[in-house]
View 1 (cartoon, one colour):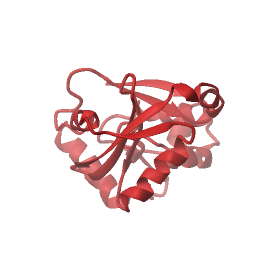
View 2 (view 1 turned 45 degrees about the horizontal axis):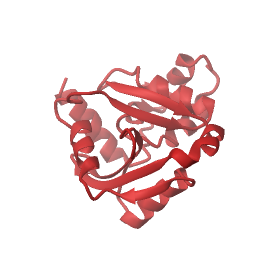
View 3 (view 1 turned 90 degrees about the vertical axis):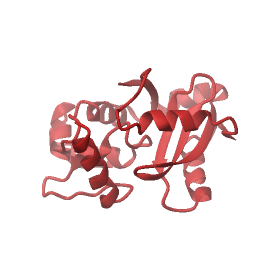
View 4 (view 1 turned 120 degrees about the vertical axis):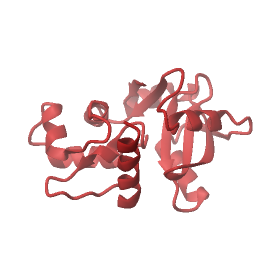
Length: 185
């Protein structure tokens, strides 16, 4: 349901002129979110939950895509995409394409998260084994925390070996997402 394109920071710097990002803030069952998509083909480059001011959230998007031109969505294009992403029936219609921007290791971790079954959790150690780096649990944890595309790249399905349930956007939200996944299986 999610198609992946990936790019390292070096590739982004070389091709940044072609990246114009349309963004919009939207309510979801998980709380408010900020969605950023490319203006050309509506590829998702950013999806974050917003618990702070919109200005701070927008600053984080700009920090993650510093060479890109950001434009507020005045045509409701991002609203339709958000509605599709958070549909109770799952993605409706076409697949969603996401563009992952990070190191090769981070991209490998983020890709692997898509293989975790819906409504289940795995440990950082299990993810490290999935990507053939069994001793890299801590590095996997760091990569998971740097995921810039919440929900679609399901970092909410990863927990610590001891049961630690940390989540960049709050443990209550993580539990709500997992519960919602269970209810819609």
